[in-house]
Image 1 (cartoon, helix red, strand yellow):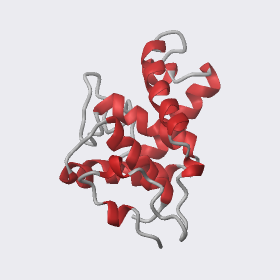
Image 2 (cartoon, rainbow, N blue to C red; image 1 turned 180 degrees about the vertical axis):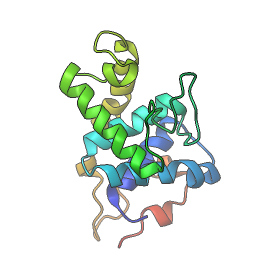
Image 3 (cartoon, rainbow, N blue to C red; image 1 turned 180 degrees about the horizontal axis):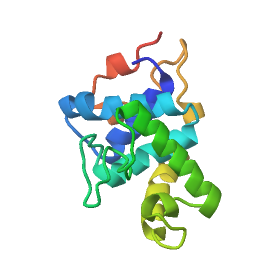
Image 4 (cartoon, rainbow, N blue to C red; image 1 turned 135 degrees about the vertical axis):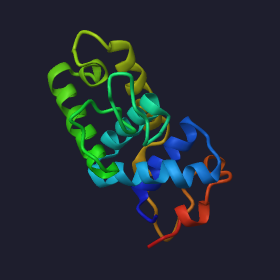
Length: 164
């Protein structure tokens, strides 16, 4: 993985929900890659990662009580495949923001319910964006180590920080 946005999203995921290197490789990396395949906008990517954190703890195989499935707990009909689910989660996220100005519709199906759940997801993303702005994380040949080392303990830092 050499894409800076993917590394930044993965850093957020590990920061929010620390995990072993094996879990990071198996569960977190595919989700981070699917998010950045769905959007190259850091704000949207942070929100998509926060949704997956709160909905399932980054579990791709999660199935909810009402039949929601995948990392973003999409209600049927939900697409199969992680990248297709990330695109659909982004589409539904943008609809929710367009209709409600928040993630309330995404979280509950209504602009009036789900405000607390929406605030949790948005707060997680906004905190990351405020504390770790993506533009400060861009990698270049002069400073390839912008990612704070403490976030990468036990995670394949060499591979994540490798330059193209």
